[in-house]
Image (cartoon, rainbow, N blue to C red; front, side):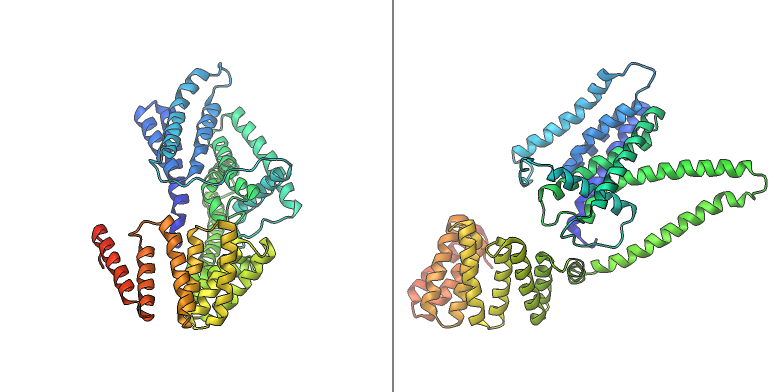
Amino acid sequence: MAWIAGRNDVFCTAFMLSSLILYIRFDQTGSRLSYGLSMAAFFLALLTKEIAVGMILLFFVHEYLSMDNASPAPWKRTAVRLAIPLAVLAAYFWLRSARTLFLPGGPSLPAITSFSPAVEILRAYGFYFKTMLFPYPHQPFISTLPISNLYLIFSGLVFVILMAGFVYARVRRQILLGTGLAWTVILLAPAAGVAAFDLAATPAAERYVYAPSAGFLIVTAWLIMNGLDQLQASLTLSPHRPKIMRGLIPGLVVAGVVSLWGWQSWNRNLAWQSPLTFWEASVSASPDSGLPRRLLGAQYASRGRYSEAEEQYQRAVANFQKTFGAAHLAVADSLHDLANLYRNQGRYAEAEPFYRQVILIWEKALGPDHPDLAKGIYGLALTCELQGRHSEAEVLYRQTLGILQKTLKPDHPKMLILMETYARLLRKIDREPEAVAIEDKIQTIRNRSGRNP
């Protein structure tokens, strides 16, 4: 597992496919066990990732494709079958609202006041369609979507083809084809929404294709199977073709495609050897984006490569300022990294102005009691203490304590570390009784919470 946080895409897709396969088996055999297991897999998919909500539409699509064209539509039966998936979905949302499930809420969608989001959605669909058809070159970090109108045209053409394919699947009752087409479009919708409404650090990501690509592969499998049937029929009708050629040609084609794609996948996996190689590849792919440079700087800093870390942090600050303006939180985060880097190297005079700039940005953007503000003040306090400016450091430590006492519990590790640091400073300036009182308080807190070292 190169990136363990990406497990949810893999698990959710596995649960959704299991749910759909079991639902199809229930439709074919009437097995209530299959239906129950399908609903259980659907619920597990919801617990894994929210895109599983799209399964409701896929259940309906399957019912629609299964209807006999010559008979009256069995809407009553369909409604009964879909009632339980809707109940499962309702139970999931109830558990979320009741905080039984610890699932942080995402940002709310802005109101659509122009055609711009619709254009971005179409462009995102075009990008992902292209990625599924030809997923190269590898893009570990996508800072912007391609702005070419060719993606809009390509997206429109693909949608026309998909609609025609779906109509064909309905008329010919090709359930596999229709389900694969619907799966691809429905499960790409959340990814397109991320691109249109700026809901994530990047407008697109290759991992968003994982679940939709299952539908793409279903369609591909259907096309291959039908193509092989046609090829088999043509070879059978030709008495001049040897039997070995019937399987040799398709086999060679499949082997060639698998070999080419496997070689490309091997090469792209080189970027996932470590966080360092990943962020180096990300910076190479998106040199004008701030986030990959900031995280690459952190990798360099953790390895003692300070001059390289400094360069990446400085370029991250410049990129963020160019994109968001000088007072953005992303700028403050990178400045804080740079200040910490200077302080850890003993470059206190260079670190101090950055800490002060960070504090101003965080206080204005987050308010006077935010924990991030305490983090900036604490860094400035350490810098002052290390320069021998103990009276200034004491004021800053007390200010940090005041903020954290409003936001953290007394036994929180950050609180205990800060109190120990403050007690150490008090000893330096010959205020032994106050230091002892703080240390006694720390010991009392640890005894109550069982956090004795």
